[in-house]
Length: 190
Image (cartoon, rainbow, N blue to C red; front, side, top):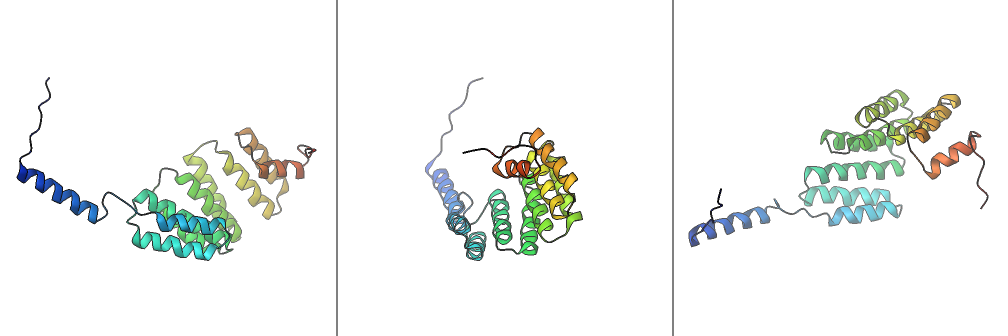
């Protein structure tokens, strides 16, 4: 089957150019993440509420795709958690989850952590379970459940979750620290 070349006359070409210009001026092809980038830098610098303001400006002015919008709400949640405002973090994670991003399991873990910090342990465990349902064997889930059990003074359950995190491939400084605390390994001599 031969492909036919498409010929555009001047009128069609100008119409196509006008259509592309219209889309570009309405932001259909480009989002502006500059304020989001500044927001993340503020988060990393410890200026969490300043970060939230930048993220909100990015949402208002950046013409974000749904994927970027979900990521921005996740970053707002992270900033609020670091600012010790778990209820505001939960609201941000709710918005991220509602957008159904491809990596939504991470949003459930993050929201679970915020629930845990708000002493809403039942909700935290439900979110960790949902993350595990979406991404079976995700070591981060077991680790975070272990942290939650520690906060609830359930040391044996915490220990079992840390072991499960390791068995599911998680290797992190935080997990190593928990292994030392529970006598599962000796501290390294450096």
